[in-house]
Length: 223
Image (cartoon, rainbow, N blue to C red):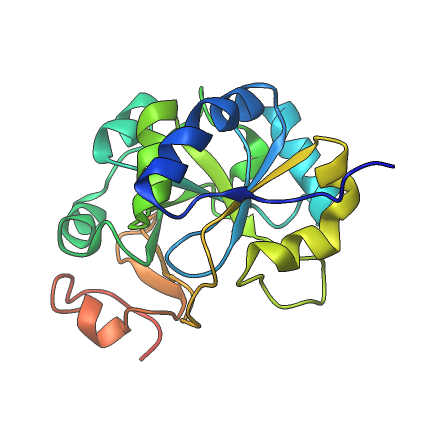
């Protein structure tokens, strides 16, 4: 009789450190990771094309809806060829790490086209989740991010919800789930498109447009 699929403890500093090596190996193998963030649980992979295809299949999500990337610093942006526009630089200096996603130009040689939005940009967030920052630092690369749920269901706020929906993938080793405890209900990250001359809010979220305009008065959208 096979054991029930389970999540990996990822709460205390000791648990986070203990999970790092096998989690990095899982990502390097092109498999999908479930993890806690500062908003909801997410799914992610390495940023190569085959891994992103695996994530699309698991999520049952059409390729027309791109994922964002999670980073742990501006040097990681440089490594994958993304560029901070002047407005994006001001927003990043004030609100990163935190629940702000910026759509940036660049990355043509490093980031798969599947991750590029309709305007040609790549959505990126510098996460403020302590455990995830530690993982990204050890991994040394950005990872993809999308909410951890099946279509039509709300984003998971516990690791158990992911295991209940995707137990088969967990049991087969295709999905590794990190258990960071129950996440407090919170708004999603605010998404700002920085591709045009004037940055634009394309998804309202945790940081209001009025607050963002304190740093970038020319911001449009979400009035």
